[in-house]
Image (tube, rainbow, N blue to C red; front, top):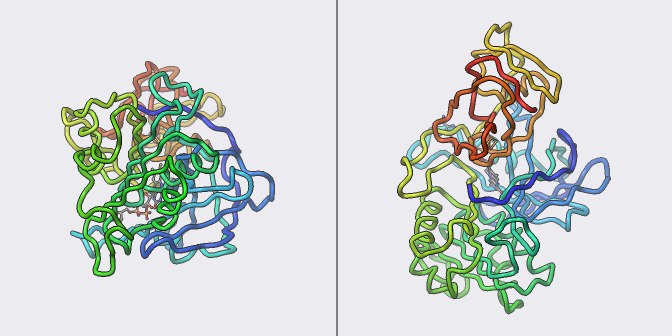
Length: 386
Ligand SMILES: Cc1cc2nc3c(=O)[nH]c(=O)nc-3n(C[C@H](O)[C@H](O)[C@H](O)COP(=O)(O)OP(=O)(O)OC[C@H]3O[C@@H](n4cnc5c(N)ncnc54)[C@H](O)[C@@H]3O)c2cc1C
Ligand code: FES
């Protein structure tokens, strides 16, 4: 993945946060402002990073684990904001259950609710002056491209640029179905009106009867490369992408065809991994965006798995799908985010033994000896650096 690397600190495991307030941003997106229950300072985060949550959802035996981007904060000082889209059943499967976590947040998480939260992490964040990445990350132009709720990291990045008084030119280009679903519209438009370096373009896929061109949105239809090329001055910038897979795939390949250096395109998936490149092996198959922690399994006699740093050694349980789940079932809490082989948060060294991937769509690490424990299981006895 062409993403800058970072492993931010913060706190270990889960910390209790309280919901300070809850505010609708559109018909489908609601923001939640979180403060730490212990009153101690919050860990800083980089714009684009996310928090991990462990939710006790009624009717679910096991905790539900999800990640949500910090859509804004107060410099990490007093609160984090999340902005969560309510996920309905897929349009072609109206009888399927709606999204577990997002609907739980919308319907049951209120001011005063407590949440178990992992520290900010993630390697999709705004590169700035002095960033380690060799190709990009300077103070040059930034293009923030988002579809749907994929705007949350972009709003965080935009707010950061503006609040730091940075003068680097930024293009915020956002596609969304219509005004009903459009979050942060007035906020982004306001920033563009008051900051000469900020440019915004909003594309509504299907404008609604009350949506006014020039006021609520700037163009109808999808964001095409032609549109993008007409907006941004050139291909010499840092391009950040987050949105649904077809959006990501079209724009990623469009940017490459245009001649944007691959090393300057940064992206994050909120959902299933998709092979982005046209020359790739095709689209992803199924990914479990829902992740639950299995309880400690019955007696197991599979290969021996040693989590070296944690000092835990257990037998592989065939009822369990991945090394990450085995770790969690035994009290080990490695870092993770997407649990889908996408974000590399769970990457660690395989010290001894052999593994196999159980998720064909995982983006395997380039680094030798590193494995994704969210997407693999042991083939032999193994020792991992967790
Ligand atoms: C790094 C990262 C950052 C993220 N940031 C954000 C963010 O800022 N804001 C945000 O809103 N989201 C964000 N997400 C996505 C978020 O983590 C969740 O994946 C999202 O909220 C959906 O979770 P859910 O539990 O509501 O849905 P799930 O329960 O996981 O369901 C997902 C979909 O599957 C459907 N489904 C469930 N069961 C079935 C079935 N049996 N048959 C058919 N369909 C079924 C549901 O109806 C739903 O449409 C982020 C994800 C990642 C990885
Ligand atoms: S948790 Fe994202 S790749 Fe493993």
